[in-house]
Image (cartoon, rainbow, N blue to C red; front, side, top):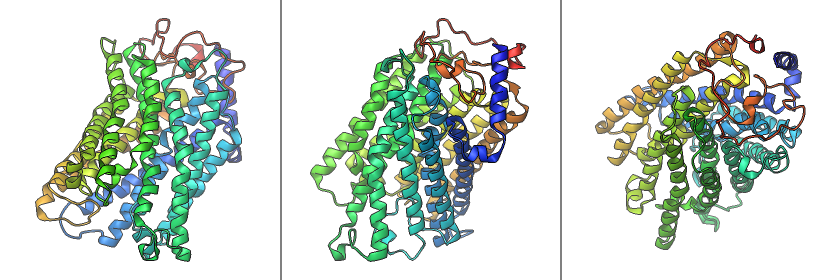
Length: 548
């Protein structure tokens, strides 16, 4: 075992030499690491833009950003966070790295297509950044018409960026679907799939089926700006509300592209640190598919104030309440898994518990938005800003780092400083709630969103929120610093420091180029811990030759 692990690590290090070997690689693990570097970089840029907006909102009046500059910073923040971080984050990094290993494969079904997906991500990102050099769009990340068709600001390049990034998402989803269908290890049935694989599978179907809709919609906006074709121009017989329908037919299912992989991560982490088999495996697996299906039918709840017929509003309100049922099933089963478990609160478990708390707040406030009378009052207020961030950032953002802390020992063969991980988490968690909770109350009192200025009665809410943004940014920088320090100075990790039961923990750390020399035998379920024990101190330097 020691010799095999050493040979694997030498092989892995040898493979890392030369930048061209990275730029031309078809190894799913390397591609995942390429995504990781870019996604964290863009995330930090978007965090900086968010702090800039909060700094402007610290006091009423104009201090640092005028209205036009604020709109441009807001748009860029949204485009980066949505299209470059949240949408690709967990699938592109952790799905690419671990999904093939979890199903017993040596790579994804189409390795070259996987590399093409990354290049499309790079090209789309470059277009998004070029738009900044050319003045930047000011439409918001939703690109609503008629403004996006009429604005004098640079809009076409960010539209092309989103279009190209959509193709990257489609190709990644196609790869995951075929990999799960065709490349599972012999003996691994559908009921043996890890729940992260189930959530990735549901997410992939949404990406493949829904993304072309928004791609066509963005092309129509570009054509309208170039040719004046009038698809969305009411004066030419078009319909601007049609854009909203087409945009949200994709973008509401895309909410679940963002959050379903995060839910899959929670389903992986909680049983490991509760030392219990997952409660209600089939219900959690099927709830992922149910969320994908029902979530595709509720897009118009974003449009209750757009003049929709009462019958349509009632139907979409009911469906929105109904889509919360499979999400509630997951939460119930996570709590059932922890009940009477031997819980060990390591850093990944903290992120999973935070996800349940924050996503519950996002979910409950989402039900408030689904109530027609309430939505009329809070629509386009800062209440929606808080709800959206509790759902997306409190969900996907937290679990992106939760997944990183969980799989870091396997990806890099190093352990991070646990005290620093705890400290950075609490800065992140406290700062996040300080940042967004006041916006609920400001929104209930009528504070509109996307405004660079505000009335004096909202000052206290905005000041508390701005202080929270500083705490949040501090926590994020501490987390990134903790992991970067561990890359070079962290203690060597055991092969399976958490005592997990899924396949990725039974290959060397970090995994070699070909992690399986033959099909791995499926001898136990993904959550069967009866014969697997975590070491007493997973953070200690292993004394075995395997880790030297």
